[in-house]
Length: 369
Ligand code: NAD
Image 1 (cartoon, rainbow, N blue to C red):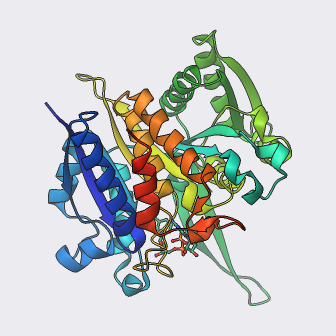
Image 2: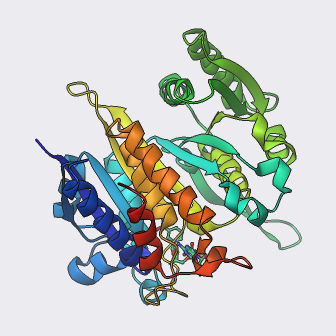
Image 3: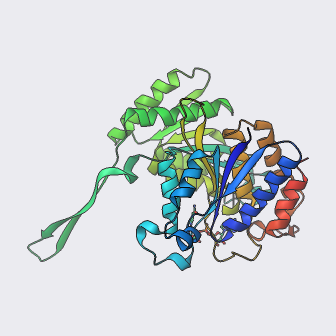
């Protein structure tokens, strides 16, 4: 039986970068390397225009049945005034929620050819390859109570309010995200740093306790605790000391963006979001997407960098289909075209050749036998 990919290009440059993945899939299928069947759906603003929802129930059902969802980007000024629960991002949030994608994987890889585009010195980032594993469905973004309460008026006539967010984690949530991190570390350099604020937060104390318990089952993986603020500092001081960093939703949001900027450009950054393994098949629900948005400022001009999208597809090969050799081949093809001096506008450097979205996609494909 062929493997099912559900493609959701979305809005803006989403459709342009997904076109390059579609061509790559056809090329891989034709060469006999893969046997993917694909279906394409609507998400974001284009889904709102067609169905009045950021994703229809029909497309949601297809996402649930697919072996992996490949997602482009959503959003644009056209949909700025649609009701809050129907805004383009609501489609992505529903996918994350219904697929129960609790583990967000954000690699930060510095290709040698782009080391000078980093905000840090070449010697600090050249060859960098770290993976941030962020808990995505719990913590302070979702904890209750979450409110702004009116406290009344002071004797000086000032209106007072109190805002509350709740940072909350249960053992199972920490346990399962740590297991993802340790399993992934085994396929890499076998080092896990767990980042929390156990010095000032009870949720950090439990996080660290559970992380240590899980670490005890992975004797072959080196485990280190790090305070989240120190992790931020170390990421810009000496990022190559890290392999895998596992952390909660809030710290992961911040640390993964800091790590991302070490690599230079938004157009280069892939991501994966994974759910729990299916008890019957062992397969995880999964969604792969570039970190960037729909880039309305360059949409429709052939200027978008398709590398983050193609690298997200490579992550699907690695994490959903266990095709490590194919993921390596796609990633080497990306490194190769960069070595050849091909650049889209966002990563253009002196002495390089500027190419379009399609030319970049074609050059990467041509390197895959
Ligand atoms: P953005 O990531 O779309 O763009 C930021 C800047 O980076 C722009 O100048 C853009 O041209 C550039 N850029 C981004 N991706 C690029 C690529 N692949 N190649 C070349 N240049 C690229 O962020 P934004 O401008 O803040 O948001 C635009 C829209 O995207 C908004 O509607 C926002 O809500 C949405 N958004 C969606 C997602 C998502 O779908 N996951 C994520 C972020 C933002």
